[in-house]
Length: 346
Image 1 (cartoon, rainbow, N blue to C red):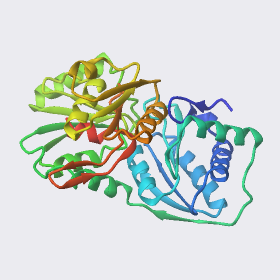
Image 2 (image 1 turned 180 degrees about the horizontal axis):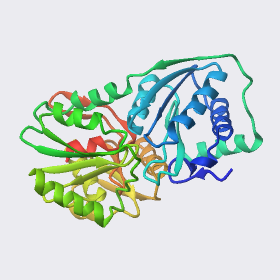
Image 3 (image 1 turned 90 degrees about the horizontal axis):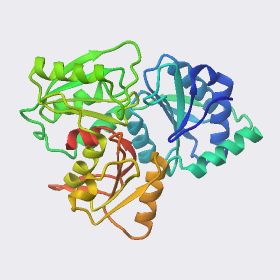
């Protein structure tokens, strides 16, 4: 098996993620981690994702589980559904990497996979421990997109983006439908840009010169106040200003944190030093690169009694570790990388 765990999730060539390989990983996952008879599943828009998701579903059904099918959905929306239901989940996505690759991102009942969870799963796969077949489960549609949109529409003011003319580069983002809906509902005039039937790999930490030129052209041609987008599974934001200039993720993170009232931050060693230069936060901790390490450091802070903890990465993803409040409205914690929160907040 050539597939392996990277900074977040199992990744590899799509051809290497054969049905047998996928079913083995999912079977061991369901054996090794607790569940209440339910598995939440979703996917991105890669050509290989429907086939891989079918294998995920088949494995869960063989184990007798109810499968909540979220369809094409942002990874943070799937994570939110798992958190609300107290259920594990599997997201089929290769995130920002090229179209010929894909992957699986696992969520336990406690949240995003940790590095310790990865080792536990890999040991089970190595031992080929698979559950005894309990029978055939069932598949039920899941309204994860609606729940995800409501998260932001119930927190931000309905006129928060009033008067803003915002371009949404849709490409093949898993959020290309829900993100414009959220922005429109918050008062923005939304201009849809360049949807694609072919998967487009967008790395928000390495925006190409061609893409930067397109952003500049779009901003001028449509008289935009901002252009927004995400990577493939919509856990990493892309935001450009009124001139089409990209705002880096390690600038989006501290601005989002200040807007939400965060006091203690966690970011990676690769993030810039803007957050320390702001002299605004009570503490700033640095960790290794990858959301599992950010989450681990956030959880250590929270366990020690530190409050209002937020994490972010240079890719722009924000992880909310506390309950934010604004004018009587509440935004619940979501300890996974999210793109919509920094886009709307900034």
